[in-house]
Image (tube, rainbow, N blue to C red; front, side, top):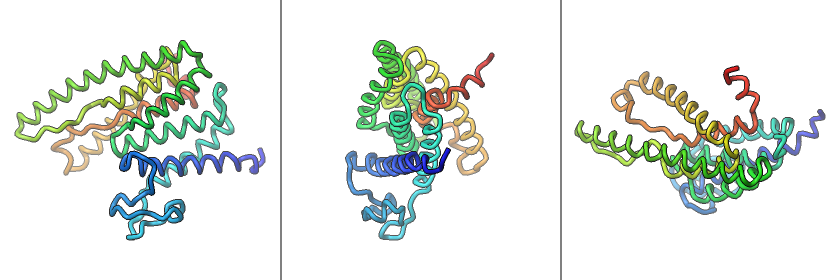
Length: 263
């Protein structure tokens, strides 16, 4: 394939990365579109410095995350251009990936799944779901994802209460951390619209398994770092990124899933 044919996916992938980085910088703080500011000192960026990934006016360097997002979105854009989803194609596929990326980054950094992203995700999920699975399976998937995650959410509330009681018994202040949040329930419903029924239950199961793997790796890291050992079992990690990764693998890399399943 001629390199000139990759100009479009390269441009769109880079643009998608910029949009994700911008929204991840402003939405968790301002809750609306605004001029980005430095997370360390609050100084406002000029648009030129921001788009060129320059330091803030006070000299604070940008997060490494911006380059990770740009490179990952660029690579995924090229991949989906060469190997587009048979059902939704390249354009809608890239839009879905950008949504996944935004939710992933915000949840990783702030442990938040914002209402604006959920509303947009639901609308996008209806479009993707209707094209991929038809209206009935799409709506059943959304309902199934919501109910499954709602049950897990209430189980998480019970776990959090037991954890808080344990902290108080040890003379420590209890916090409001939850194993799962209401945002995870909404995210599961959105993913259900995208994947349809019955694929959503497998996606959630795979997401929980991926979360377990990430949690185990985090546990090993915390145990190896002496200063974290005392409270190692009191650390929560967001599950949203695991569910996002699971849905991405199922939609865009289904052969990977098929190869790891028992024959």
